[in-house]
Image (cartoon, rainbow, N blue to C red; front, side, top):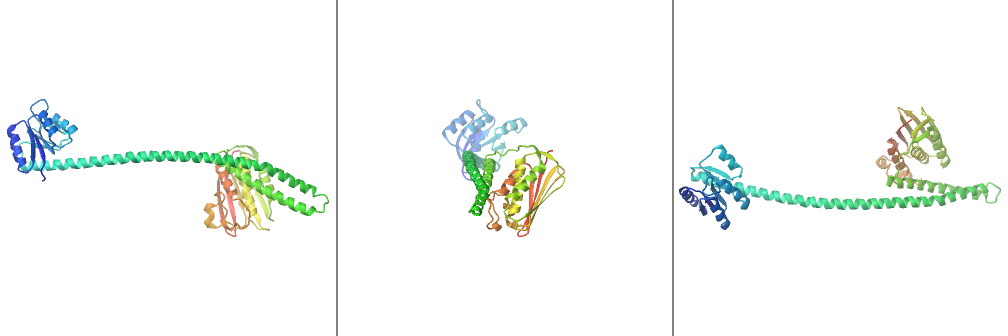
Length: 392
């Protein structure tokens, strides 16, 4: 065992000398012998020690237990108790000071050396553990501080993103509204040109042709702006559910008539209705957006001569809609992206579109707490299934 600097605190002078002699045989250095707690503390004040051998009963006002408590507070070095007593009361007092060891007198030198060695080992391991705990606490504090700073940065970034989002929404809404007025004027002018061209005019055919082009283009732009406005409101969280009493069949007839009027294909719409309530309590605009977009897409992506099936019915308080076409279909690997904003399947070719229609449908259905699913195969058409809870 390596040599240690040891302080002996023992009020029996003979026992102290015998202990000193035994320890020095093992190359330990005795830095002092004291018979009181006060003297032991004076020695430690001037001489560093590796371990203290402490008798419990000492001369003076401080006994061994109180002296050990002071040593623990000021010097943090291991203490080995020496005592001829092993009664329960003494042991309970000793345990409270967290001693490194406890030796009953009389003791043999071999036992004593083993106790000292274990005491030193225990003390070093406890200090290593304390050091690791302190380092861990410091790391936790640093990580906590870093996390707090990261949270602040994230909060600032989210606030900035929210401000940018609000600014973007305001710009989109203002610009879209700004376009609406001139587009309405252009559409009115195109319709007037068509009316004037009804009279005999040498350029009647050309006027009608170009007026039709203007009208169709304006309607397309108007539809696109309506979609942009919708998502401007969605991004600003301004899409509200505004239910009121409405005539269900009147809405469906309007949807079919509008889609037929705007169709550029020779596609037949086969509209059938099952059991339906005459009136419901729901949001007309959201329902209209859902079925008008789905039916328009079905017609747009069908070929001349094909049939689009549009079926609606009520089942157990749920409005069901099935829109089935025989058109180009959707590639299977793109099914997961179908409701993404601005997404258009790769097989649409030159068919015009913004990629917003199905995103609007999904958003409206979510607001109405409904569901939408679909089946599709390229070249064999697509079928959409819509389910929306009803309030009569």
